[in-house]
Length: 274
Image (tube, rainbow, N blue to C red; front, top):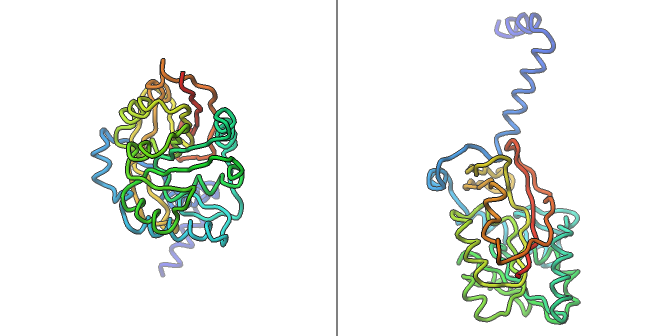
């Protein structure tokens, strides 16, 4: 009886309306994951999230990057494995430029660098540099795993920037897809500028058109891992203001990330100390 009723109703629905209904259903499915909301404060968003410190995230990232390290996979980003490396060519170009300008020395401080995603992405182009070190500053549980499974004479892990700089004369600070996940990114950049590292490279950072920042919650697809965390979409001019008078912007470029937030875009910058 219900099937007969559905067929009768369907007969009277114009095709265009039927297509719209199908589109809405499809859209609702697609939009289950991505960035959502417009929160007044970081704390308001954070209380609804499970965050980065979930062990599930670390386990998934470890599993994927071990495959890259052992030659079983080509490339990893955000724990997802790819068949080919997706290079950020501006990032790679300026890493090489930094080495060229410093007597074939490249000492990178990769803040929020996971277990070495950017390192493994670029290492084939960098291993010919005579003095090459890649230092990752991360959360304690990432650092512990990094030291146990990934650390070697080139790749090192630290719990703080201060700890890293006590042992290394870094000439590049890399901030790739990390600023938007900090609760106070402007304060962090003011601190970062105070270290006087020669180059600061920002990549894969989320922005939004207009005069206001936007705080969202990012929902990660469950096939990657089940996680939610707060995420900024920045007013571009406000974010880069801490560099004024201390660093010169050498270049800016579009990053390859995308989001479902209207008027959003991803970008990177190269800054050199004055």
